[in-house]
Image (cartoon, rainbow, N blue to C red; front, side):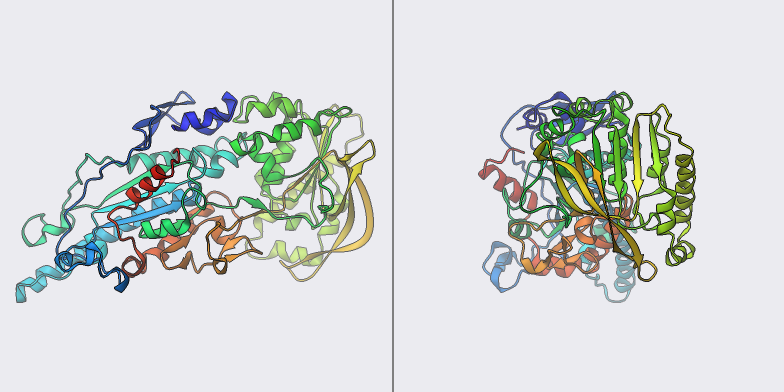
Length: 591
């Protein structure tokens, strides 16, 4: 099934547009599985393809150099074709890598694998050429080239359970932050520049040699390819172990697909109106797994006695995701219609909710938000941004002042000034303002319990909160109860206290930290030929750009010992891509 056909099952045109639309100039992603092209033009996307069974192409092979690394697999493979006596001369000149997850961490990992390996190969071939000249002049012998120096092809397969790539760039970035989504254009170009065209022979270039005679092996530049395999769920359609058997190296980069739980969330009864911010964000961004949530949000914000114009929403947590949700809820249809928001969200949000409260247990100096998100709230055209000066002072303890003065505290100093200015503006409001919508940023409150609505006990009616105070050393202050209680009305609550990774079904439990929701690793190295990158490696922190340094760290761990990894754990076959495609065809997985 083609990408567009898979998306058509989601339902609305806007959902398909949201998930296949790119805001670049004319770009293209080719798909070997269908012989089609995803075309981006004029701000809209279209898919040119035909629906047909997955085709397993005949990838061109390269006759390996007799001087390259032997495919030594150990005694368990002693009877395989590769290791039979008549084939001992065959050498490995291909490196196959599977990356599970195609968001920023997966794409950056692929990018720096390609650039780093090509750079390493260039330097190695130059070194080998120089050594051969020196050795040849003395003994007539040539030096043994390294594994990297022998590589002719680097094949990277990007695997995702969704039918479209780029992860949270599509489904996590706020729809009114189109400029942030421009990174998607770079990822599209990455696929295009490493497009797999088996009919195209490997390009030649003289790297550190003349390309003739004894330096012949330095003339073949490694060819790198990247393909996307969407709608493939690892753990269901193919196991992690099958990937590790098929590929030389496997990198897990599928991020965090669950949420951290709030202690106040009742276990006896799930009140209608309590959701995770992750669900809400995915829904208004058109994620196909969350389209059905629209009915839930509709019933809460547009009930018998509730409409957006009188609804009250509480957001628990004070990171950028929480502030994104608050801004989207306050803006309403008029301000969002020209953004990337899914059309099904506009009617539910209406003109914006009457009151949104963003609640945090600690003070503003400990807040996880950035100044950009705060500034956007101060500039809302038809909503008041409310900050209580007393709550700012409660959080500005002597220890908090130390945090502001510490190295790297300048961003927090700027946020402190912006919020104090906002608090001054709040104090000047006399109740006769023209804005019926309000966004309240409240500090030093801990939610204790969700209370049902007396008129409908199945729905949320309010949140019982306790006032807190800060105790502890700088950068380690905790919120301690003062036993002062306040009940805050709320028709809907969004929990935004952090995402959490989940373990793949057949992953060894010893490799996963359930409490942190991360895969145990040392600088990205997990076990054998298994590596990890992104949130699944470090936890849900940072912005899109944070994944660059993280990916480079994982790539460095891969390359520091790549030769031994491939020898000890690498694939037996010539192509992990072929092995995967054969499995998917056999199991009738539509990609």
